[in-house]
Image (cartoon, rainbow, N blue to C red; front, side):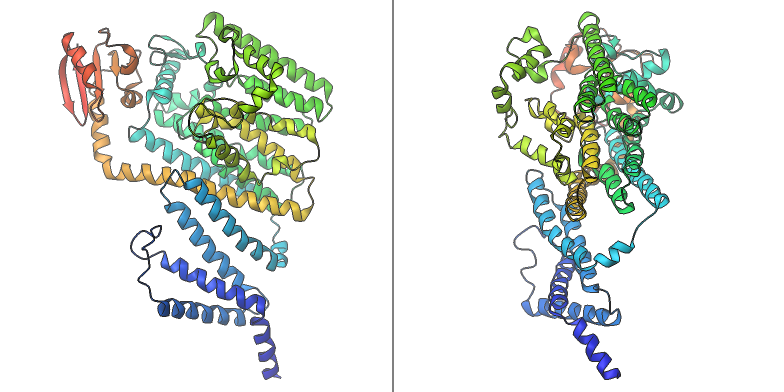
Length: 597
């Protein structure tokens, strides 16, 4: 009887399916072990000295080990667990370590494609085990909070180290440091370093949403507060995402997947890496607007809709697109009309205020669509309505480069969501995808680069569309696309975020004393002195009434101090000009030159 049981177990352990899986898992484990050798495993010469005999021996050892485990844990497909573990370690290591930024995206796609083959096999053979795992609402909420905390922590570390390593320029961080200092002192968003004169930031962009962070800055008056604040604001979006998932009655596993997608979405983290911008408020505020619309709680919906408008003058475009969705897709004519009227009215008012009392509307970003520049954004709208054929030609063309940049950008937005925003039979729902056209039709390269802040509003719409579509898809199709999305999301997050994390932590650890010395040198400048300063130093002495950036001040001798960054070339002409006007060197150390009038 025991002999028969032993034979039966061996037959189950060495089925064709399990044997092939075990062999591949053993080879994958050898590849994983091989990663810890010396040298660069992205080079052709790596591991070439390893003998075939040694490789076969190691694979055989793994095969024997996995066979033993399979026998002892009969009834589970343990080989698939070893396979997916080795594949995960290899894939994650390759993604973390690959350094060629010009090829990183394509390499990431290749790794994702291969990894998905292993993952789909793993899911198929472990389907019964996976079905038994169904987390409850407490578990999914805890998971969502952990995702948000992780997102906020990683982004905060990177952006704070950008500041500590003197990597944050005046545009666009130093100017906000100066603005928040003035907001703390006077309550007004005044800046001197944005347009080389004293003016309100609202003359450039109308962004009252910044006042949300002012109480925290008042308690902790530091540029680090702004960097951390942006990360926390963005990460808070996991809460409305979790609530929407609950409203749509997603399973626990699906709820965890969608909150992870948000927290790890590459364009959200990447958009923080050029420091704080008002755009960070768009994602959570839009998601709260969507949530209360779905719950038919219209008073809080309108409160958050108005809050969206207060982020920036062009945020009205996002609200207008949502209003069109409410009108055309949901047939809620009353609320859609109010939202549309509100957005159009606010945009017209904000544009009028900027033109009449401010520096005007920044229309140059869509200059490729404006024939008569005097018409401003109306000229772009005219082109879209009168000549849609020309508009189509701009979707995947750029002012420079190869045009491939927009294709990469498009995939970086869609792949982490498994292309789910397009998976709907309701064409009216495609209105939610319209915000991406803002980035696709321009030649302004920062708009179609996930390393800048322009993707936050677009991301909110795409997450919302993804959640709406998930509820309509049948289980096999839905699970397949969600799996593709979550794997691509994690992989692209690693490929875009980890190089930043590694770079800034490394240069901080290697040069910490030098950076601290630079801060000590800058601290010798009196707080009430007016200063003209190099871009990458400005944020560190922006807490004063008058601070200008050297590149835009034209060597005017109207300041008490001139502070030059001697780490980079190009400061010599400014140094010479101010010396000729009677300024004397007061201090020269740590790569900083301080000239006093």
